[in-house]
Every structure is written in structure tokens, then in C-alpha cells.
Amino acid sequence: MSCPLTASEISEVINKLKKLEVWKRQVEQEQASSSSGQGYKRGDPKARAAAISAPQVRTVFPALPVIAQTWNLVEEAGPEFIGKDFDGVESGPGTIPQLVLDQAGFVSWDQKDALQRIHLCYSAGFFARAALECFLAEPLCPRDISSPAEHFLVLRAVGLSGPVRFASAEHFQRFRDQSFEGGLIAHGFQTETELQVFCQGGRIQVPPLFEPCSKSTA
Image (tube, rainbow, N blue to C red; front, side, top):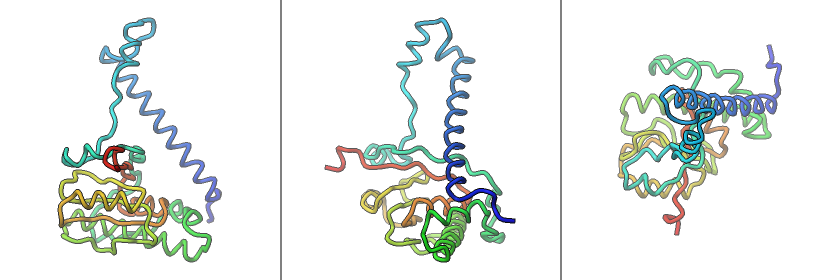
């Protein structure tokens, strides 16, 4: 049975869900602050002022301090991955969910080419996760999944403690120049949609997006 929603309608639903997730987190944080005696309290001007002036916690670049201090957060990580957990190499990539296949329209106008790229990204995501879980020295798939690569995801690097992504080849190369040689698992994609499909295949959330600090781009 075909999906009752078009690709654009699905994209709109996803965007609304992301906004709902952000709102839900904010509500939970406010409730936690209230229960601990901190943050905003109705009718308490001092508490309101303290809550407004309290520093906001932002995601920092997950790397050694000498590297982390040169990067700024552009976009927080995507919602937590919802689906079947990664349960070993033996299971294989499995069947691609229809919701993922419906993203093909955002990859290429050529439907055949788009579907091939979706399948490739989904499988590459799975095998990148396998290389990570099995502590392989090298990735199992080519560095650039689609070309010209403009979106980059780094799963593992010496000095890095969590996955990150970049929105240009220049930023990715800047990070490579900062990190130590060996152990790198990173892939490049022509579109952000392909990067997102890759994360679906790897059963991970889309990592936060970073760019160099202004003082480091001079």
C-alpha cells in the first residue's frame, strides 16, 4: 500500500515534530527547575530575574579543549533515533522504512537515481556503525558517498568524543587538520537529506552542526 502523504507533506510533518520536541524539552526543563527550587516562579520577581539571567547550556564541540574552543554550535543534534536498535553486523542493513524512501524527492529529480542514492546512504550508515562497533581501523565504505560532497559527518577521530557534522568541505578539512592521523570514520554527502538517511541506517540521531569560531577563520 502506498504512503498516504506526499514527500513535501512528510517533510512538513517532520519539521512540526522537531518543533514539538523542542517545546517538550523546554517544558520539561522548566518543570525540573521549578521542582528544584530554582528558575521561574509565578509571582516571585527575584526568581524571574534569576531565571532570565541564568546562562543557557549549549552543546559544546565534543573534542579535546584545544580543538573544542575553536568551534561554534550552529544547530543542535536532531531528535533521538526512534526505531530498531543496532543489534550486530549479522542482521545487515535490513529493509529501508517507507518513510525514508519517501525522502528520495529531496535528493534528485531523477527518481531512479534518487532511490539508488537513498539505498546507498542507508547501507553505508549501517556499515559505518558496524565499523565503529567492531573497532575497525578503516571505514567499510568510500569517504564520499555522493559528490560533490557538501555535508560531512564524522563518527570517529582521535581527540573526538562524539559524532559531529559540518556544512562545507572547508570546515571538514579544517577539523581534519586539527585531529590526529588514524582511526577516522567520516563520510561526505551532496545533500543534507542523504546525511540524514545515513544516520537512519546507522541507527543514530543526526549529530550537531558546527562551524569554526570567527577568530579562527581569519
